[in-house]
Image (cartoon, rainbow, N blue to C red):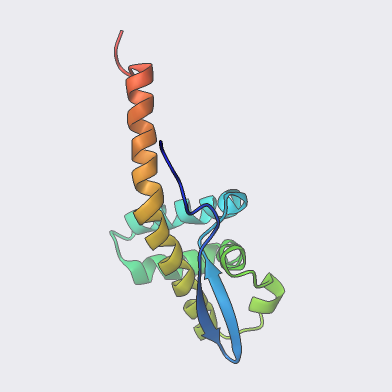
Length: 129
């Protein structure tokens, strides 16, 4: 029997000023909100030949709203709560969101997507007549 035990987003607590914030992996409902920023980050990484500092600068300058939306989706903080914070807080939050979600994605989602792709290839016989 196949089994999936972890079905709800898991959180990591961070301290932001005097506030404890839980950073969770993205839920299904968050996928449309964060997909565009993830694609833009990938494109920017390619454009800047893997330079993460250039990618971060590029994304922040071109899609700050997307970054704020992703942070809000992962932390539960309202965008209006995040906007007045200083840049250090923004980078701290973005770093925490990326750490939690990247680790979750690589450890859980990537292997599952690869498994799904393998099953689909076997079932549909892609490329075969």
